[in-house]
Length: 141
Image (cartoon, rainbow, N blue to C red; front, side):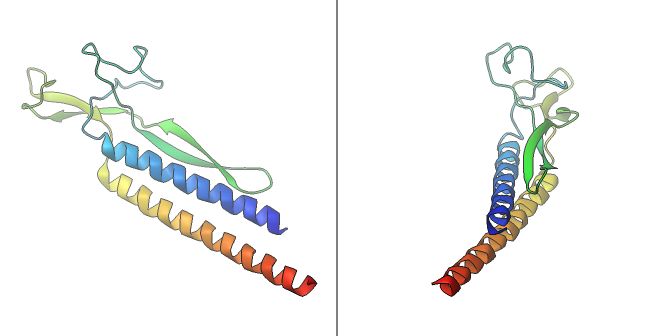
C-alpha cells in the first residue's frame, strides 16, 4: 500500500518536472524562428533555408495510468506559429510580419504555477508515506 502510494506520487513529481521543463522551453523560445503550422515536426529537420533551427511549442498532457499515477505526453500547440508585426526583424516580410512560435506568456505562467502546485502536492504525499513507513518500522522494532 505504501509502495503504491509512493509510486503514484513519484509519477506526479515526474509529471510536474516535465510540465515545468516544457513550459520553460516554450518561454525561452518565444522569439525564435517558428516552424510552419503543421501537425508534425517540419520535414526539413527543423531548420529554415539559412540553417537556423525552427521551434514548435508543445503542451503537456497528463494521462492517468491504470493502477494510479500519471504519464506525461507532449502535443504540438495548434497553430504552432503566429504572425506578428516586427518590421525591424531580420526575417520580416515586405509587410513587416514575422512567424513566431504560438507561445502565450500568461498561459506559460499558469503552467509553471500548476507545475509547482503539482510538485508540492506529490512531495507532501511522499513525506506522509515516509513518516507512515517510519512509524510502522518503529512499531515493529
